Amino acid sequence: MKDAPLKLTPDTTLTPEALEKASGVLARDGVLLGRGDDAAPHLVLFDGRFTPAHAALLERRPPALLMATRGEGGQPSAWEARLLGALMRGEPMIPREAATSVAWLGSVAEVTAAGERAAEAVLQAGGSRAASSRVADVVHEIAANALLDAPVDAGGEPKYAHRRGQVQSVAEEDRCLLSWAIADGRAWLEATDRFGRLSVSPLVRVVKAWGEKAQVDASGGGAGLGLRRILEHSDAVAVRVTPGKRTQFACAVDLGDARRRAAQPKSLLFSLERG
Image (cartoon, rainbow, N blue to C red):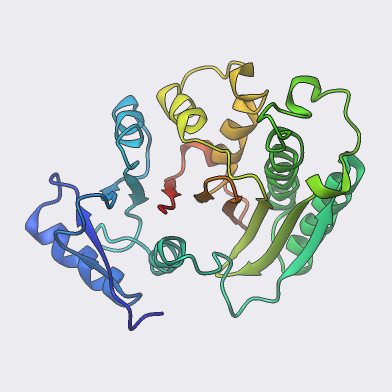
């Protein structure tokens, strides 16, 4: 709730002027910048273009929250401030006012069908065909990761990741939830699994190699290249991991027709819940 302030420590690279501007935007969603809990993540405001240095920030414990400044005067955007507050409070990351569609997915065919429905929603909202294609791609990647990479057996061994290309459906208890909505000129997409196993390491590898030719990375269960595509297509990615219980992977994809989406500013917010 906005009347329950969330205190984050700003990164030391912020100038007093930039800090004042950012504080005003974030405070509207109850996010206060100041000396927070020592175990709380630092908020890093940057131009939204990844460098290997940002990978190092993600490797902090806890990972730094990387937020793009795209508003006037180098401020964070209002919609990203809302997303940050929702992420850190455990609230829904898709805007509350949006009409949200949901689907339980248990097979690759259902993932494809859900991607088609989300892409059609983009077109119905007046989004571009390029945007609808990006949305279908992102749905495929986040849902396939939740469906095939997340599940493990009682001993903690992956059930499907090692044979990702051969699995067509999963056990009933391993299904994942996909949610999508259109709001703020963006498609909001979120995949949720019940395992809570995703670490920040695959995202660190993607950011570390940003700007280089994409390489297939099978060390994360085959999801490395998919994570890169997700980041390339999205304006913001927010991940909330509750260890052993669930991973919620949310993306905001612009509805416009802009080319070179990979070169546009990005926010990457990774939250590992404590306790």
